[in-house]
Image (cartoon, rainbow, N blue to C red; front, top):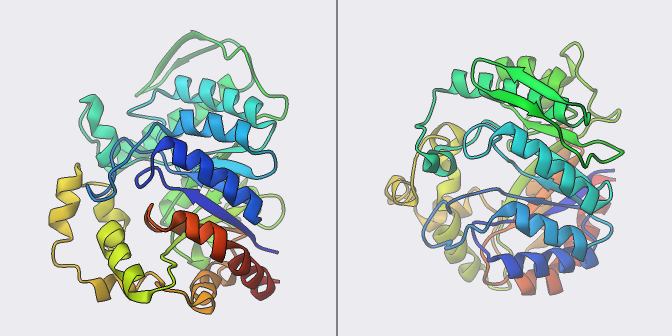
Length: 328
């Protein structure tokens, strides 16, 4: 059976509201919760970008059942991998084993802020490979010295290491990335419902098999609202950046850049790619593309801070019932 998650979208909500939504999502019956990890929102209209790790620490204490996950953290620019190793180990202890560390090669939007520029994709992937090696080593609790092409670690040890370790989910797309990273991760993260991602991962020697312990974790935006026009308006205002695709979204540096790049995107364009309105069956049909592609987990993004409480109060439970019935 497919697991269904709720997204703590740090780009659209403040920290206290995110913790409150996390509690409500657990009570509504979601299986897990994922958090974005941003320094900036995609668009100024979204208006938020609290520090995800502080939020997740609070969520770990405010919830007791749901799995938790970063979706995703870049451990190479804004954060040194040795620091990611320490804070993910701490969060796993606070969450009592419920946390998965989701990692990816990052976006210019968030990583350029430390003044180190924005490397080419080949360099970013090699940096991610080194970062994974460092994080894995430090999660053993042993003393680590590391000399790589991109990173150095001097006599480092993570003193508080969870007994169960920390699983790594890796965001990958494309045959070359899958071949390189599948053997290094525990779970696949993918934002397109493509069976080729799952099949490609499972075909790599040394990769943990999806469906046999490993998870394939997708994500999909929706904009539920009792009024369809209100939903379409909100989705266009908040999520018109979404259609740019990873190749564009990874490289633009500021919310102003995303605003310029999306100035000709129409509300009907957004409504064509994001299910909007009160029709739960339409939402289920959109989400079903993921389990049909072999994904084991799907995280829902309810677009916009406005209406989030109403979604969790009125729509989340019946939506989950329909999703579970359709996917079983």
